[in-house]
Length: 474
Image (cartoon, rainbow, N blue to C red; front, side, top):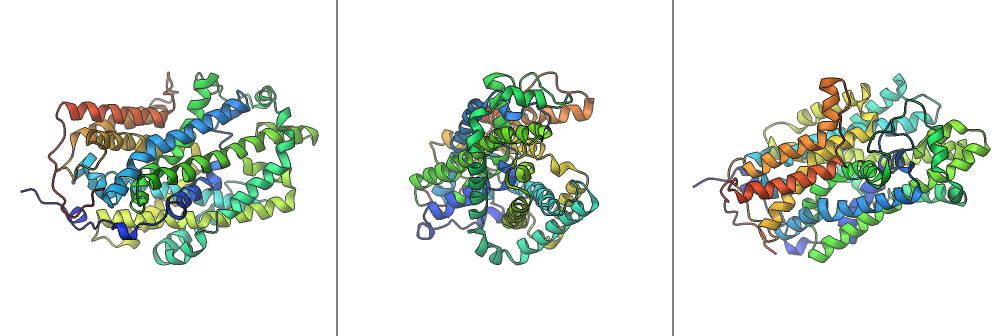
């Protein structure tokens, strides 16, 4: 008889008695993720270098694309993982063994989830450090900026391992800060939104801006641009729905937690960001700051909208509100690496990961948030797709851990990752832009992972199901 590895055999399901309300758990957690300023500040941009960003075809199409992307995050990337967590009471590392096998699950999605947390830490540290040094007029990429970001990452690592209980006590209050700032920005700019001109924004774009062949052209182009950004940002949080679902009492709680925490929060932050950038256009023209017509980053418009004094206060508060997220990145990474490598001291594993995060900051990779989101989307798009397919094939339940490496899971992930990431990898090896564009890469990766998993399962490329007596079945 095949034996289960310790990380699976020792897993203890979260009992029904320990389940809590969806509003204060799942919804609140996801709302905190989508309220993070690093997400909403660049929603109008979508991807660097695209003329006009997501607003290039008008405000209505940008908002419609955002809403569609928010619902895709909920229904495709989160719902099946959330239901799996609720029905089993088990964490992602264990539930994922049905899709990738007990040997393969050692690496994915559990360990991969942990490793990517350090990518999140680098982005958090870079942009939080940037807000802090901007208060004193220190330029982006300067030695002082990089030093502050490095210290930010190190302190977050320490608190994530040693003081997460203290961070958790204040984290629940942090969403109040970005909500208040977003509403303030909206109040200052909403009166100008009716005069927004996408044509004016395109004229102001620098000559080096890339109109692209798909991005920025028509409905599909804007959705691809918006979806790549929003879904790529959300992808890991979607798979983590397994862990959040463990605390939900029933399927209605899983649904409501996602609709409020994911859809409503994403639409709230994203729509306000789009309206603020659109409403700032008139302010930029009337004050002679026409160079800012090509600026799609909300935080870089603070001084123009609010004045220097208020802008500095808001930047400090947003950085302060982002610190718990940086700590939780390390906390999650420590848990994932401890599960995969129980004999390695977490200070060593997290120290290596933190050093990698700092390297991403210093060498400038962390500043390209859309590219980071692209890597995450390419990695977790096919994971969420395959897990959803596995869930549906099993009759909307968790069938149990599979032996070894489950070929259906790994093959579907590999092809999905190539589809989702080829646009980023191709230029590295060829020095040229990919001659064609993948529509909304994270979503395309999801579809490929979903379809191929079903195909490989139907032709018998699934390993044997092992018994897990202690699981909960709802």
